[in-house]
Amino acid sequence: MVMTESGDKPTTPELARAAVSADSGRDALPSGTWNLLRDRLRANDPIWLGFHVLNRASAKISRYFDGKARARERAKDLPGVNTREYNRLLWTNYDWSHSGEEWTPTPQWRRSMVDEVMLALMPDQPTALEIGPGGGRWTVELQPRVESLVVADISPRAIELCQERLGAAANVSYLVTDGRSLTGVADGAIDFVWSFDVFLHIAPVDQKGYIAELARVMRPGAVAVIHHPGDGGSMEGWRSAMTAQMFADLVRERGLRVVRQFTAWGSDGRHALPNSGDVITVFDKPA
Ligand SMILES: C[S@@+](CC[C@H](N)C(=O)[O-])C[C@H]1O[C@@H](n2cnc3c(N)ncnc32)[C@H](O)[C@@H]1O
Image (tube, rainbow, N blue to C red; front, side, top):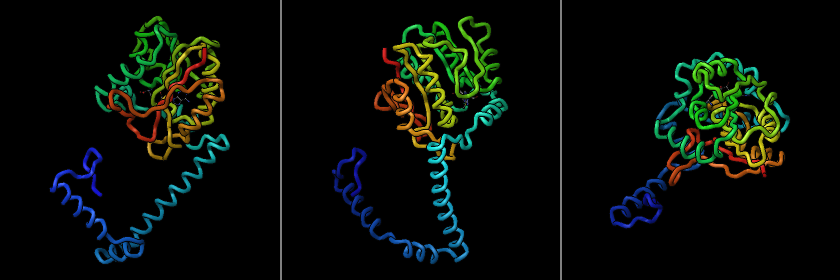
């Protein structure tokens, strides 16, 4: 049955007629693999059909082996394509002329990310930590609103860019990381952690390292907001193999508390993460 936009059954005779004809159209479609192939062969030629079948089969095979490789990365702590060295080189040589704003869908989305996610979750005047600032897209929002800010990135180029952008801001300190630890940040020093568009590209084994480090550097009561893959990654967008469930389990294993995992926010989920397979996890350190 064709539903109206509200999900109800059609309410007018016109809508009911459209529903009936759409339903009968669906019934008239060829079903079953052989019928479909025969139908497509009639309208094309055998060589086209050969390409078509190979294309469909190879897509299935590719998905199957990608799933296998991702599962092995998770089970055996392998980095897959998301190695730390590759991340360091990639982002050091990236063209940062747009400061990461090329990943911002709209100005309204950006405003809402700052007001309804970052600031809504940030404790008052915190000592904050940002992991993976890149060209400083979110760093410029954090810096004026926090007591002090530690900016940590695997790429020395990203750190240079933030230094250039924030000038002589006295409340910021910088750290080039090894991609999985926060050596140099004192135990219990941090009240608020922010990382957006970063863990997407970090292998689960290195995310594990960061989560253990966050458990160490977060003060009791501190809050962390981390954007990461939720669906185990896919080659598209070069996502890592992390899942929402695995991330939540890792957080809990370290004695931290998952507050919420979400993909959309604002009134009625007005804004959403650009990639539907990703998620934001908010967690805190029990006081
Ligand atoms: C896609 S950019 C996002 C930059 C910024 N957060 C934004 O949203 O515009 C990814 C950033 O994460 C950093 N990064 C990648 N892997 C990292 C790791 N293991 N540890 C720390 N930073 C990392 C990169 O150097 C780069 O600055």
